[in-house]
Image 1 (cartoon, one colour):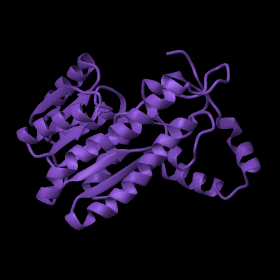
Image 2: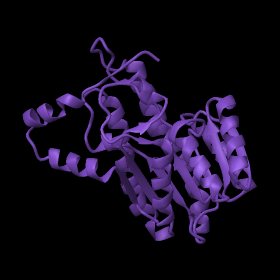
Image 3: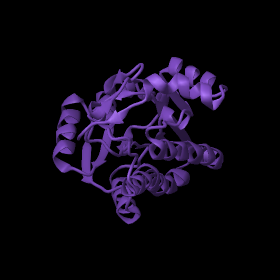
Length: 262
């Protein structure tokens, strides 16, 4: 449950499927008002309808390309004029990695990941923080990944994009602390989504999107600055980081993967 002193208006990017949709439904059950965006309108409207049925106060949807700063700022301003935003969840992201033939991400895919995963999240955060600072309340949530702690040899650009989010969130947290605006970083492991259906290889300790959303909501409601799960995988990663590269590569070998056809 969302605590009484926490936000009741939640803005979520990438809300049309996967973790974003699961988060929207979780907050809807708590009676929150939702501002949801994605790039595709049809699946987003389906999620919005489910959220209304689940108990959301109100739901507003918009098709937004988070990598376009001007469009993001206009959208956030429009939401702010509707209701003050209390929690922003920068969830929108894309994933590319090694193909079956062994080739890594193309340069175009690398650029796209950096624009959406990093620039998109920063666009949303920067558009929202102005009013939060003025009100001296609010929370910005960045959805990163355990790949930020253990970079994936089969998805180096994705790993770099999520590590960049962690660094930015840590710095922003300190910057906004005097103004009572919280910053939370979420570092999940494998989550069952449409994307993982194309992930050919082992996915240790994978959990459902709904279970992941429940843990994130609980962490936000408690004001946690970092939300990491599964905990056991986090500690295995930290232990692995002390190993020399040659040994760490041998440990990681059974978990290498490639992406199948979309």
